Length: 541
Ligand code: XUL
Image 1 (cartoon, rainbow, N blue to C red):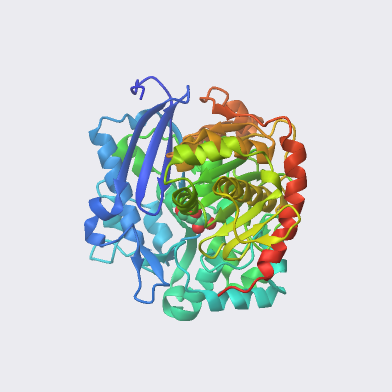
Image 2: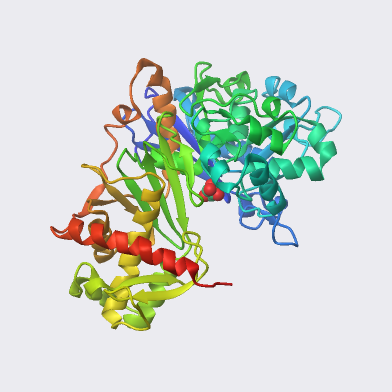
């Protein structure tokens, strides 16, 4: 890490994630000069969260105490101050939050936000009513993305708009239980008094921005796309969705804005308590996944593949085709473009199981199998769903030979290749179904545990017929937020996000496609799509 020099200009990126609050500071050279975090379970133990959340006895309701997030910000800023961080050098800040979570501001809270007294911490002023301060939240425990208790509300929303496909077409996703609109509908139905007492609803991201702004921050288009409420094409709240969700939502949500918007300067609270310059700008906060896309500097044609417990895929989309699975969001760095977010449950654990079964539990042997089998695996195609997969909604192991006949076994080496090819064909197929296409110059950015295996990445490169680069994204949401803070100041003068980030460290090239890859996998992808339909028709629990 470079050290803070008081003369340099600095940009802050915060990330209010599920388990912790993190911050990164970068200088004009895009070097990280400071990072810190507050871990909720251990450093704010009195909130008694497990992994940052409370899970109700039914296992479906999952919430986080909103004051825990407020207190975490107090604590983080105090830690930075003690570490000698020079707040007077901060030109702009932005941030991200776990997506979909909602915060309910109590009537009168805007006044409290406007009049924050620098002699007190934020949580002292926003917490439960006492003689001096009025409480600011009508709901103490915010529903978060892990909540899956709104099945009924999802059904009703889809019915009201004319079906799942229609809803996906308008908002970028069919109804999902964790999506904010369905959470709001449930709040309105189950806690009508608290709902009545609410003057504003924020996402976790816009709630955090409001604390810095000293007033209600707009919801940005990108995180707003995770609500089942925003029309991702007109960038306005969809009337039909709002009406089906709760009354007066237009007023309660405020007008959404592009993610690049400068919302205003930090409030005087920050100037007087910590010494921020009064010119320091707050750039709209966004969701953690959109912020990660910015942190990875994903561009048009690129696809990011995160190989973890579950495999996640981010894509830059120009012409989205929302589908019944996967999410299309407005792009956080260019609001006229889009991004897709796809999640596959059978990732690393399945790779490990097949390694144990077919490769003596050794990654070396697993890699050798990939090197010693031909591209296209002599026509064998495999689907490996140890648990019910999301895309496609199917389970079980399904192997096919070159004539599309179902087979029960293949050689150990062919099984290894069938797994890895099958996983990457599926990532490509479903990204393409949402509107992704490989173009000249397309890159695959690989990250996550399995991205250290060169032979797995060679298959990835071949299947996508594109070079694969590795990228460390451990801090990508935070870093992306700091990058976005910097870009926010220049956007109005027509400078693109990528022009601002020219100096950022380059991703590392690790694999390039082999000469026959395009021919082999274009053909195989067509077969894979047909076979997937067959697998889908097989009964599952
Ligand atoms: C995305 C999602 C999660 C949260 C976690 O749809 O639900 O990735 O954003 O932070």
